[in-house]
Every structure is written in C-alpha cells, then in structure tokens.
Image (tube, rainbow, N blue to C red; front, side, top):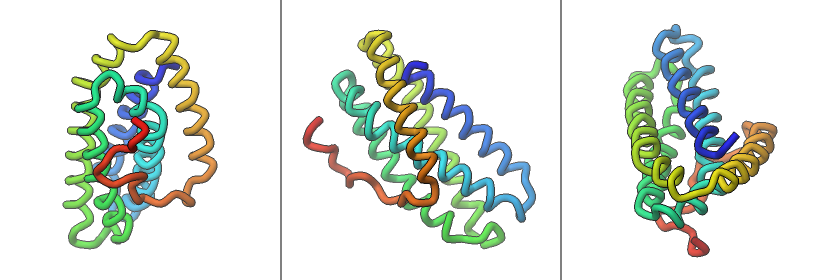
Length: 160
C-alpha cells in the first residue's frame, strides 16, 4: 500500500472510533478513548518519522502546519487519558480533540496529500508505505510503552 493510502485509511479508522465513542455508554468510553489515543500516537509517529521528512521536500509549509497540529493534540490526549469518563471535562475535551483531528485530516487530505501525489513517484509512495507499515507493526507491539510527549517541540528537526 502506498503511504498516502495508508494514512487515509488510518484517518477513516480514527473517524470510526470517534463515532463509536459518541454512541457508547460512559463505562466503555475510556476503553475506546485508550484505543483511539494509541492509534493517534502511532499514526503521528509514522508521519513524523517517515512521511513528513519526505513530504517536507514537496510542501514544507503544510508539513510545518501538520507538526504544529500534532503538538496541539498531544497535551490534549494526555489530559483526556488522565481523566475518568464521568469527569466533567472528559466529553468537552474529547470533542475538542475530535475537532482538532478532523481539521488535521482536512488539511492533510485537502492540501498536503494532493501535492505529494503529484510530486512523488508511485514507487516512492510505495517505498514510504512499506517503511511506515514496518514501523507501525513495531509500534503496535510496543503499545502502552510509548509516551504521548512530542518527538520535538515546535521546531522541525534540522536534518530536514
């Protein structure tokens, strides 16, 4: 699978989890939110480690915006995970997370991904997708061992 198709598939998966959470009882929300956060962390990590460095060569402003969006949701996820699903702020923070994630998806799928599809070869996208899939497999085997903390602060790595 190519990198962009993989990321879009993950976007749909996260949207489906948000929908499940919205329909769930208070008692099962926390379990679903934990799954959601694990998926989001893994998704952000493969983007930041593999896709964004390649995409930066195509559209640096969009990658900068995407990294900023990641840095906005990390503390929000951390705060949500520190709460119980019946806490007063839980649903409000979860809705804020959903809005921020939806905006991120819209930005990537509307701006960054089309630019990358046009500028990158099919072979390059498949190669990136393979590397991303390998990293995702590794990350999923380490679930619960990863921090929610950002890989970097607001500045992009200097090697880009």
